[in-house]
Length: 141
Image (cartoon, rainbow, N blue to C red):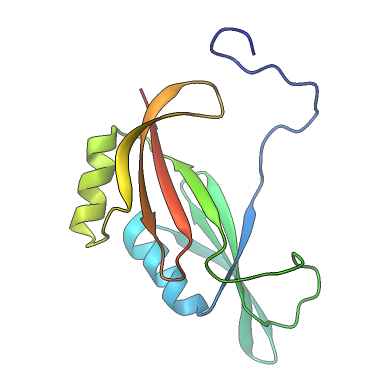
């Protein structure tokens, strides 16, 4: 690490999407839509039931998998409530905290100082989604 930038030798340019396993796709996606203004862009159905729903949250993408959906290309132990996700927040941490309060989402922790993947200092707040996944909003200073 040099200064405030992180050196890399990889051709990886970022994470395209993250898949999370949930107990109830509709409840989870409604939460992300209500709290973080998510947009649904894809439903993959098996036997008439949604198995995977793609949602976009700002510049991030989540594939939300229904637990036991019959798809074999998944992690070894896909379990609701096992994810720990951090989203970059475009405003200051006070606005993130206010937005969560307005949505009725209790904070688990924060604001607390953190450093982003870009090596920039900031502040984070943490909360849980309906499955107990730990969600972090990080506002860089």
